[in-house]
Length: 195
Image (cartoon, rainbow, N blue to C red; front, side, top):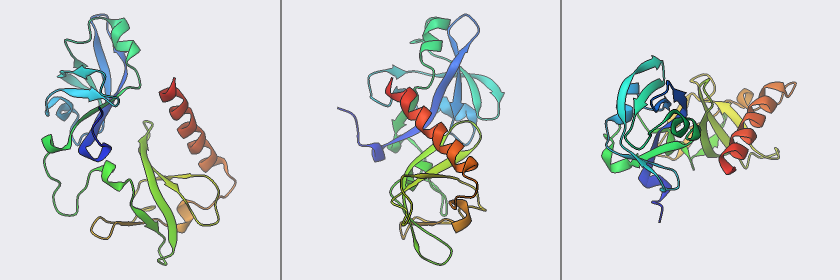
């Protein structure tokens, strides 16, 4: 049985093979890329696979090269692309005051700068260009909207009150291209995960 989502944290996702000996690229969601291997064995989202990661080196910001005894070949490493890796939350250090884990944003109520309801955070994504929050149940808007998680778009996170402030301009539909492209990327990622 898989642990409750709130009891685990996502540390990263496999991003493909590197070389011919089974080393893999890993998109890291940790503060420092080398921390991807700092909390013991990690497991896939469904809990079906476990990996004992060894950090090799940083390839570029937020992209680490790792090895694991469970990955025996380049083909093994390539087949893992897109699989997210989780660890029990109790293994992570407690966040400092005014800090939080991105997973903690899920379920928070969004308000705009005037204090009006702007929906609920339903997911947090990172497709490689920065963190995005997904808002659902936005008054007057069908479907979901993705918002870049920047200080400009989300100036306040109040974990104590269970709220985040999202600027109205962050979800307004201008020509539709920016939000449409982000939402298409989200749909593609869900489709890929389901296959």
